[in-house]
Length: 252
Image (cartoon, rainbow, N blue to C red; front, side, top):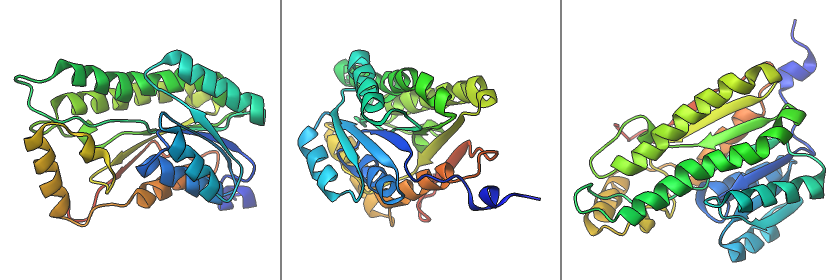
């Protein structure tokens, strides 16, 4: 017979979460949703002016931090500031990412480095810095990936490679920490209405992404935030390891 706490799920009130890539899109929506659910939220990004606006919009206590996930020192310092301010860290939502699609032939290699450094290494850095505190709290790590981490397509070779890497890293992490009471969740969204596609500098790839998005009813950032909350709210004996969430209209 399940206890009342098991039936109602994990209580989030007063817990502490760190959300990277929180200046816009999924990260911002997730930070707001967590704050509304009663968590104390630390938000990090490079665009600190947007974090200030987020801090003003959130109903609960929010700590804004400048974080460049491509720098391990920056991430580690931010984690230390979170623990110094709140005394603990219960959840990490690793969301920072960039999508710079384009063909492999004649590609700007600097953009490859930027995607690998942000999407893959940045995710690894955040996990590594936060993990000792998450283990101590028997907390939760949420990695925001993409359907591109399951299916590669024309023009998304390097972006998909980083997301496939996030999936592999996350599963290895899960196997490492699950016996220590830490839950690990991989969120794989399909097309979401965010500014991510505006980062694409290749004209053909940007137009293709725009046309695909316009052909369907895309997900909203708040939809992904709800998926994060769903995973966090599960009873402690329930670990939602992955959530694949696509727009109804999306085929692949």
